[in-house]
Image 1 (cartoon, one colour):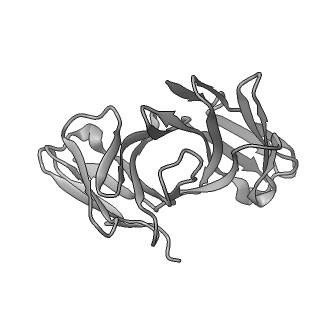
Image 2 (cartoon, rainbow over the protein chains, first blue to last red; image 1 turned 120 degrees about the vertical axis):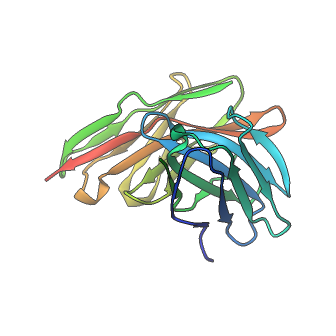
Length: 114
Length: 115
């Protein structure tokens, strides 16, 4: 099976712009989670989608939003970008929503805000 | 609420020496425990997981971890490290919270293997 894919891999934006990141999960996986990774904060949970519904949300401002499509592909949007949004954004998929499921990560999208 | 503490942000170790990366967690519910590894410019991949049963769990690349419920720890060990083990290692706990799965990651430990 193909792994989790994320596009684009690298992105440079300026403050105030908005950005959309895309994630294609492993075939058959219905749960998709998004994380923000920065050197000082580690992995911070953004949100999780399962069957097109947001099931869980981390402590991020409303500028961060997402959605999941019927084919389980997911997009994450960040509006009004700030310098502090520069980070590696990781998407992870899992077969289901149980706590015992491991997560399969994509390579990430490196976002730089200037 | 659940949390994960990785006590060491960086661990330098000589090649072929043993290593232990420490992880402590707290949770008000039963949890499952995971270790992930991240190589430079890549996403995370699973090293091993503890779901139930034997408290000693063996994973890929010769790593193992021991679940200690009384000490709420899940330390990762390898008896002899290789240069290729240089990476960042993340401990994670997964439990049910408010009816949904919640995964919490530690801040990561950078393992630097010195030739």
